[in-house]
Image (cartoon, rainbow, N blue to C red; front, side, top):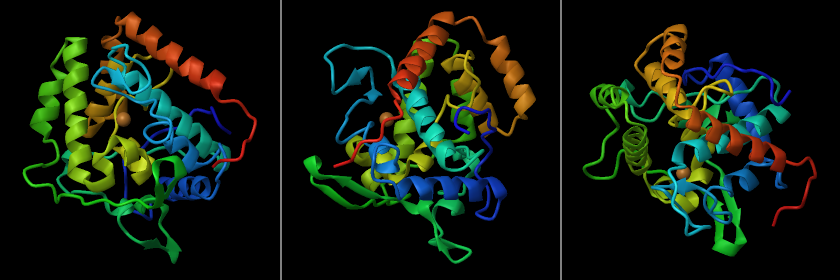
Length: 268
Ligand SMILES: [Cu+2]
């Protein structure tokens, strides 16, 4: 059930059991057009909601705040809870950008076992933004843009300043968005391309509540580097102490959880 503890595993071949669950959950959400469904949830990020925070800004307020990591963590958590409402034990998976293989096969094959693969994209429907079509990607086709390297990720991990860490990881994430290209490189449409893919390449979401965003990002990145989960968690715990961030992240998650009311409404 939603809210249960799940393990977020590395993106694997399409046939892996956890990838099958991920596909089943995302496919189910894509079939729901009300506020429990994929189109509605993806709409928080860009069109029509525009709630997301990037580079200390949100389109909804003139205030400035470094909310990139906490906002996206909460957003992906909402998506994952919705996935679990559909498929018990479903979880997001994480994509190792540094694996050097481009987009994981699990996100590119058209069909798995004779069934259409929902991880290839979704149909965006946002009439107010003139969007009513399938999403597009153009992976690896943006000139001069490549996926991050292990050396870059390592260097980031050695950054002990929160603000610098947040800004640097945001720019690495931007680079991945642009590398995936097309709708993925536009904030308005990125979340529709594949929030699961977005999530798979994302940071700071695979952690128990109470472990801060910074720590979470570290665990994720260590995961990228192939460090075992217990070692990554030990590292995260050793890094605790940025309580302001822990609290901030907790507050954002709490507010979103409160807002995630059970009433079903008709989507546009
Ligand atoms: Cu975003």
